[in-house]
Length: 263
Ligand code: ADP
Ligand code: MG
Image (cartoon, rainbow, N blue to C red; front, side, top):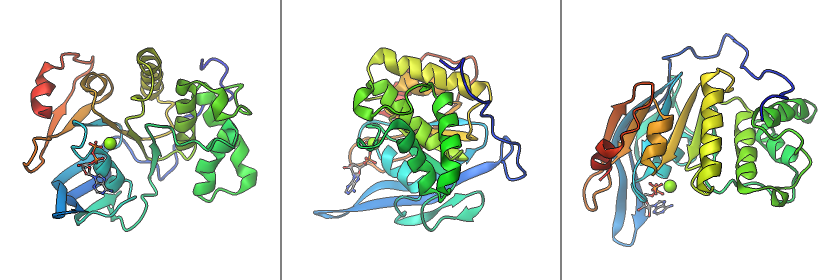
């Protein structure tokens, strides 16, 4: 799929490109509550977290454990109730300029072509129209959508639609790629293929991003993809805590140990 790529997409070694190990995202004492019928409902309580350049971090937890909430706080899409989120040492007050998001259900605009959907990512970052096409086509090739530039989302399979979601996020070359259950709307084989291809790109250094945060409830997926797993506990009525598990390569596929943590 990647054989006919128009151009190598490795990020230019610009002066501002973070080096491996640099802290990109931080959460300090992050708490988040939502207003409920009986007052404030705590979802995240005192989360401390660092995301560094060069790593894939999985946020693992059961449905309702606060994974999407944490991801949205890190991306600056919602404000924390207390504590803070930082990007490269600066406290965030709005949307995080160093992140781009891939969504579970793709979130494509059906009346736009593949290329136009990808260019939306650039438009959102203020890239002028004349400079959008080339970058969009590079991202489209990188992610295996070569030849589908003018197709509409409804003409594509689920896997191809999610590739558009990836291209739209990667086209802005975000420091951190944020993914909220990006494979869970896909069938098992499609998900496996896409995961494998993304890992291959990541490990070959062609991924135009410096870190990945992957939200998932799938333990095997976390073990397969991540260098580090942050587990959000989800016992009802208890304060949520996070555990961190570092993974060695080659991947340890035994997931039984995580079953206990996630509970
Ligand atoms: P996850 O992504 O792990 O499934 P979420 O972060 O979506 O978890 O949700 C965590 C908890 O917060 C759930 O109990 C959910 O119902 C609640 N919640 C999420 N978003 C909102 C919201 N906008 N308003 C009120 N409650 C919310
Ligand atoms: Mg979620």
